[in-house]
Length: 330
Image (tube, rainbow, N blue to C red; front, top):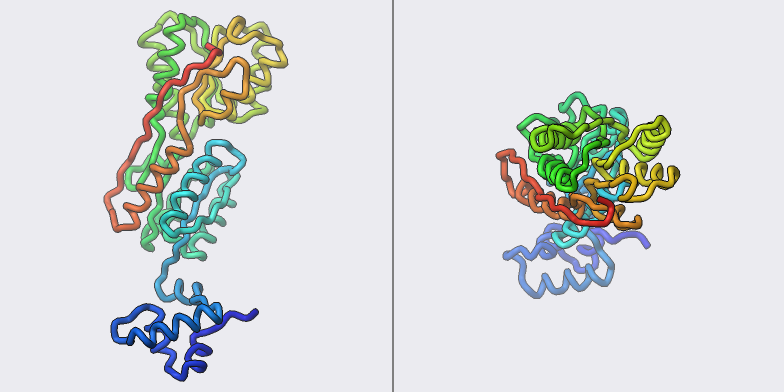
């Protein structure tokens, strides 16, 4: 069925198009009787405003963009779900895209977000990002850009971050409290601010509070690289009291390797991770972890985005707190 137009409504009622338009918008100059007739006919003919024309006129939409490195990640999945839930409650819809950690794809996504005239954009940056100009272009055009999780190190942008330093410090404290002396620390990409913050805080705590502890640091990033690294280290005769995983993807690789090596947890090697919360519950014993919730971060990010949309202009960094969740792996 072809969508009805303002012109068709006006022809049926014998009134001008402008009168129909104002009646639908409850303009005070239009009588209640006319408004009633127009609205009843609009419902009967299933009239809907031309959203594309409205967008061109107002230069805005009720669409929010989300750009993440990958959607097949439990953290980003829970973040997206939380933002979408909050957006729906506030009459926004969500357009989701993934950069796959490639600059070319990320740039193409930003172009599409501009073309779709999103009202605001949530971004977790790619590893390859070098130039903030495309994000600045959106900002200069009045589109709030809010970075989360993976954020730029420059100060002029709104950011919602996990308490990365506290999360790593809590993990280090738990390791120290158990008296572990040989630690294998596995982190994400070394160029990312989140990795730098977690690694620096973890090392600082270990060196200051347990100077006699040996800590080896590697940056495997993903599931398979983490699995292969752990396998190669243990097969080469390395021994560790505990393995610390910076995130869920690394944790999954660690646990796969431990299973293949047939090591008892925590008897032969202990495990602790920073996690969104789901992955640690899939193993027996459950993995002790420091919670960094994507869902909670998503709700906090949406709250900040609403403030930005209401013309908040001063860039600020907001942090989500972390907490230790005890399992049986440490």
